[in-house]
Length: 314
Image (cartoon, rainbow, N blue to C red; front, side):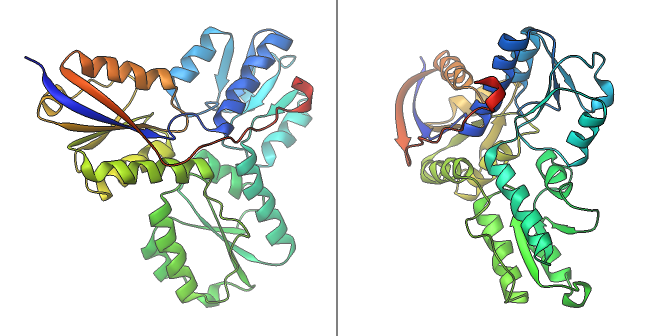
């Protein structure tokens, strides 16, 4: 006999406006210009999305030097790129389309303005994440100091900064962890300048808020997303911190933990901003094979954000 489980479904979840725009850009470029279309880096961090676009004629590369047919369009991923990338594309005479999320572009513009205004800049983010590489690459080397943890704030020395200080952040961080780092920065550098509007994006904030509401009541929590998806990994951390220690990432090819499933009465489900809704429905169908399921959606915010496509695709 199947055990009964209640599933709380977090909302908002899944695709954000920046991800929808980026995928739309690739698909519309294929329709307008034919195949192949090159994309520098994974367009968004989700294996299924990438595999689906490959089937439609997309070739993914990590660097422009890997582009074999220079007559074909090249798209830059939603995470943003360093300034040297479009410069290289111009030298190679490539036709390129920038799918950088507008909220990441906002952080890029902030960094440039702060630099022009004579600030030393601290970036709160994860080393080697494409978004961080792109943001740091907007300015000359050494212009931005990257910090990842509260402990790194303690190691900062005011004498090592020759100009007034400002901070910016990656868009997909843990809201709580970042607030703690910012608090320590302000304690140590009371005059530090902060963004006019916070850099962590609305989608990251809303998804974490929904997980926080559900997780304390759950025996088990699933976040659907890829292992290289920053915002998905943060959702797992948020669920654990909110009180559900049995929280894990369900990624491409990962098996369902059947024993944990059978020992649970309440399960929470969310998905990262680059995970298709179909993966959520597939997971629920899989759970139904082992459990009798009742479903409740928990809505903490309504999202109506839409971003325009580049003019050459309209």
